[in-house]
Image: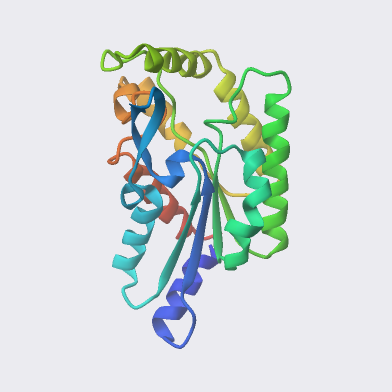
Length: 240
């Protein structure tokens, strides 16, 4: 990818500007982990320094210590692709990023009729706008949601949420959304960092993926954010 070429060029010529990578997504991108009750409402623990965006920065800063790497974390808890469309210019494109990483799906996955089409259309708008600006683009598929209700989930409110996400994970609704996203990427020439497939492979190999979620619902543990970061950096170095 061109981002790797720019990293190399900036190492050689320190007068060149650094690189800017923007991440657009939901609570996982933002860096949300455990859940707790606050005034009777469900609230997340925020820890952006542990999010995969920061881990990408850490890897690139290690590999290219002379290159200024700027990371824009435009993740928002509870966000969906259709909301990302409206804040794309303000939160991402206004920073003139060299690379934009888009990761949506967890909140977009709904049982409503037309949900897949809504998700696909929103992603199309985002991809079109990013490509029109001449930025490189990666669509990253999210992690799996819980496949069971973990025994660690004991509060009735959390149990209801876990039962709902488990249903959407196990009945194929989530897969239908991500399959539509992959098909769209193929049509528009958008590279896919398919982390969801890795989670599926682990699940089929007997890994308890529910216990790899910090909230036992849909937020990966801090350790599992390393998987996203590693796969993204690996893709940056791929030669077409």
